[in-house]
Each structure stands twice: as structure tokens, then as C-alpha cells.
Image 1 (tube, helix red, strand yellow):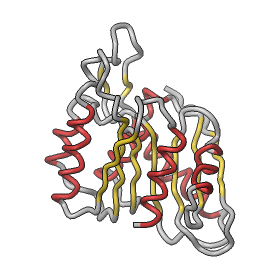
Image 2 (cartoon, rainbow, N blue to C red):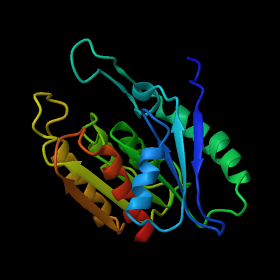
Image 3 (cartoon, rainbow, N blue to C red):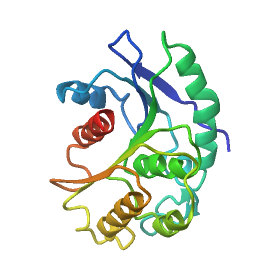
Image 4 (cartoon, rainbow, N blue to C red):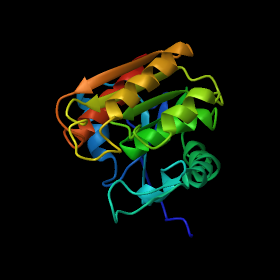
Length: 221
């Protein structure tokens, strides 16, 4: 299947070398998240928002059924998007910067949060990861992660979840809190500085602010 054409938007208000964070977005251009980061007083960094994704296909690590009957299935082609990110998007973006970044991170919300975390096991390209309300309920994800080695040496990981996200009739999603806590324990056991934050509301509450809080944490730890 032909890859979607990606929309890349770069946000930066600094002239010195600084961290760079890549953010796949399901809608919008990432400006809302970047503005929240500025409001939270984040230190200087570059945010690269990546839009135009086929969300269920390009961010799922392997194929499986949709979350409800007759829903779009997950295509399991995250490896293809990761390859595009590593070999096309990152080189092009970073070549355009006046100075190389001090370090590189990846962040994401929901299924993009799962993708960001999954990348730890696939590549050493990212030093820090922020997964906000990540879809860690994804079938077999935690079990597979627990037995697989990291591809690199991650420096910090941020996880978050809404307090009401488990209150759902959906069987696939209702154990997301247990899965997120299991992932937190796994990362800590492997010596990775990790935090998990519980936020008010369900999966769709204050999404830009939640993502910005995760970005601020990995920028300051």
C-alpha cells in the first residue's frame, strides 16, 4: 500500500543547539502542543510534528482486529513508518537545522504513544520518550516487550494515563492501567529513569496539555 504523504512542521524559537523531539499527530499541526510547552516553561527545544499518517496502519506494531466489531483493523505497519522516519524525515529535518541537536526524543499520544515506546526496542535513534495516554493495551505488547532487549540505551521515559481511561466497556482497553504500570515496572527494572503520571479525565481530556507535560518531563530529566 502506498505510504501517505507526510506533513512536517518544525517549531523552534532558539538559536543555540538544543534537543529535538519528533511528534506524530493524528490531527492538527502540533502547534497546540508546542504552545502548551511554552506555557509550561519548557527549556529550549525543537518540536517536529508529523501529520498525514494512516493512524491505525502506520502506528501499530503488528496486525490485529479493531477495537470493536466492524472497526478498522490495525495494519501492523509501524516498521514501515519507523523506517521512513529514520531514513527520510529525520535526516532532512536535521540537515536543515543551524546546529545539530543535543539529543533526540520521540513523543506521542494514544497509538502514537505506543509507537514512541515501541521504538525503544527497534532503534537506538531516540534518547528519551514521552508516551501520553499510550495505547499499551495493544494485544501482546507488554508480554513481547518484557522479553525483548532494547536497541539502545534510553535515558528517560515518561508515561501517563487518564484516571477514567479504564472505565470503558471495551475489553481491549479496560486493562490499560495495569499494562501501563507493568511497563513502568519493566522500565525501572532495566534501570531507565521512568515516571508515570495519572491525569484527570478520560482518554480525550486535555490531550495537548497531557502531551506537553510529558515533553516537559523528558526535557528536564
